[in-house]
Image (tube, rainbow over all chains, first blue to last red; front, side, top):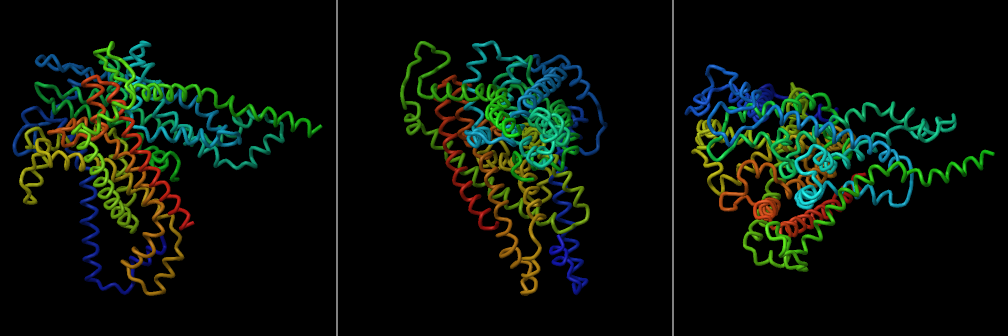
Length: 297
Length: 300
């Protein structure tokens, strides 16, 4: 940081060069902001337009806003025509919540003791197990989804919340264990040894030392895991049906053979992205760590 | 007294990790089993609509790929797309990271805003861009480009347009990931080499080339590794925009395996293609990981 500061603020800088530099920085900042934010702005505008305004050429920036698209989304119906597309968006939203919360809860319950074992004990097969967990990140989802689709059909798990929660373990379980392990390892060993000397069992160490001290880490893991579940598209695309579609699969239901319901699709993308926007601001310090499974802190 | 207690404690500790791991191992078995089953299916003629044709065909599904023209094109697109996406995203990401590192005003705000594309569902990202590109190419994007003197682009209707569209959408969603990791790397670099370089009279370009980039190389290799793994397997964005078209121009191995298994229900063939893709991912990741180890050793 200091080196950079010296680098970029040479005191002898000629004022003319300084102005050029400032203009260049300003332009670059504007380009970066526009590239990042414009899609959101435009989709928000589109979601507030009537069908006529959406298709107007050239695209209109000034129009009479309407909440029709959101109303149609909440009502879960298409106002009459085109009966083949009737996305029930409130149901999809509820499905996303149920599946994501269920998957994260299961992963955290199974993941806390597993992460504790991987962080604190040495045993044969430890590294192999850690690597196996990590390797799930390499596997193309289709290699899991083909056999899962066939198994789910056989065992009646197809198009059920329970089946999807199990399938989502592929997303959340390896992530949860790796993340929790990296947080548990940050707790100094001396603290735990001190607790053991004071008569704590391993369970006592886990519940009285590790868990309280790593609460922020667990919260981050839960939120990020929830977000990854919310983003999931592949598994529900093949393993869910109309009653269990989450918002990600639900949003593409606005595209049909007859037409694309642009306005409602825009409203749906806003609603589907909203929880992510709020949550990502909550855990922004940890997102990089989460996306690399703890590899980059 | 204390030694016996310690010993009993130690013996119990030997079983303990497995006990702690048990719930996770059960779930893990539930993941490994379908995979192994799928691996087995890849050696069979499993066709969902013709269950009585099911038999073990050894390597037929794999060998038939050699004669399959779509496979060669899908392989080419998979590798070509990955190369293009990684070069573009890491190149631009490095530029953005250096820019944000230079203490510009409003950096915290820009950094926070950059998280947004990163965390929304990729399929939603694809739909957002689909709206902007428009069904008849009369979308806002072509309108804005017209001010720059660019002729209307046929986004999803032409071969090149479709490939460019997928690249743009994937870059929008993942550029923040690359930028944020590299920015974190830049902020963690030691200051001494910079001071030494400045004393030696090095200019900004020399410092970037001979100090920053070598020091940053473990982070660069890491983002290349993650982006390569994900680009080889990209599915959501292609599915939601082009579905592999037009004329299979954007069909990668993942989309091809999906088409075989879920459009034509040839589970055996689809699974074999999935395994080929997996092998490709494993080989390329292995090579990159070796590179990463070497990069982190040389800077450590």
